[in-house]
Length: 197
View 1 (cartoon, rainbow, N blue to C red):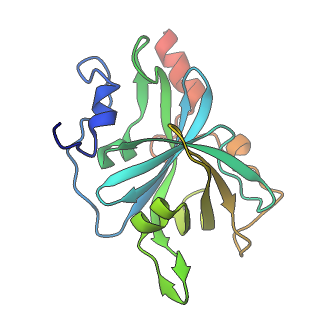
View 2: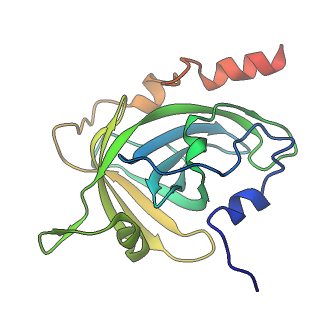
View 3: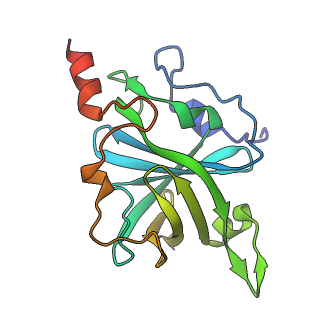
């Protein structure tokens, strides 16, 4: 049996001749990035992605990230995506995996803040062990977030939670009040109108 490559799952689910999604051929950044993509597929959700070892570790978050530390968001782990995917916006055609509209809802740099016994734990190891903390420097999301695995299986389940810090805000709901892409200014509804015209 041949060696499994990082993006085999990503490629096997897509026909990149039909879908405008990027191929997997990118290199790591010196300062890691995160991206949150709003995705109106068969089920509307937000994809939360963290750069780790040359890939975007990815989770589907049905309600999107919260800025309220009291709210725990269920995050379903999905296949790693290539770094090129961080800039992807557009419509995945009907009949293709993940068919629907995608925008870059937020993006920016992040720092791994996972520690144990006063020392930093490598992000890849932290995620493998099932718990990581990061500090996001996005346009909409800022400050600390924790992601913790709660269930193993084919599609492991995690919880994404805003940490209590200066950026926490229980009154703010950016998912509903800030629908625009941070790259293009488009919303999911704008893309739908373009597709219908």
